[in-house]
Image (cartoon, rainbow, N blue to C red):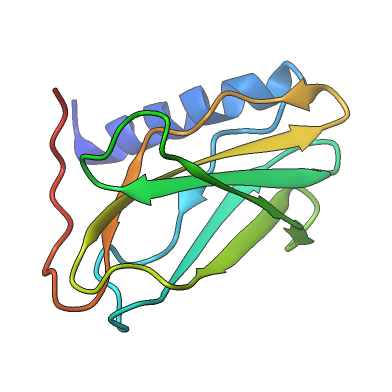
Length: 133
């Protein structure tokens, strides 16, 4: 399957949950490698036919226990008729460290499922490493 067809197919799958009423899965816009040693700006967008009321961002340092997620509520900002943006400035992160984040959105139909993990790193760690066990 060509990359253009795969991209269209991928977008249709992401939007399919939106047709049922819940927001589509977020698309992360941030670069995986951060510019600062202890802070990171994470940004994403999500499509929804009804207004997104709130985003929930979960993040943790890579390879930490499953119960170590930090939770942040983020106010969505409407970009156009169906797209909502979220962003959060994460502070007091470990220098040159790798992290992962997940996001979900809530609209009048309820919460969608958590996104796949987004891998990112603070300055000095190089590119974030994807490693699943």
